[in-house]
Length: 76
Image 1 (cartoon, rainbow, N blue to C red):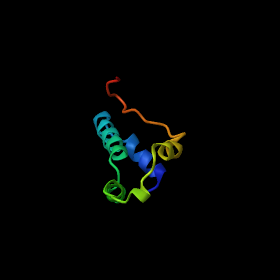
Image 2 (image 1 turned 120 degrees about the vertical axis):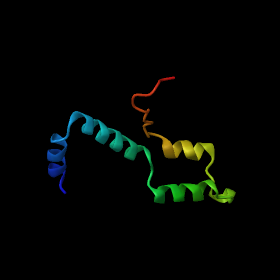
Image 3 (image 1 turned 90 degrees about the horizontal axis):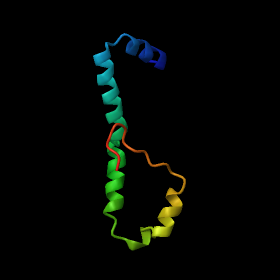
Image 4 (image 1 turned 90 degrees about the vertical axis):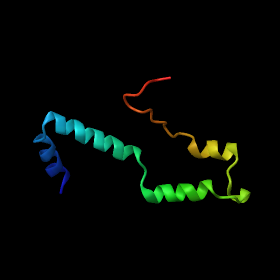
């Protein structure tokens, strides 16, 4: 199904169904794929200090990344 077909289908949804679809898509964006989670678990469980990053190395790697705040949540 193409994006154009998906958009046409969304246009036919009721307001309640569109709300359900928005919720579903927001949830899909928040839940990582199983393969990503497995790789992350391997990194977390890595006991070899030779593969660890120093704080400075980590900061270099994440420099320029934007932190997304949850939408509709409370702010601190």
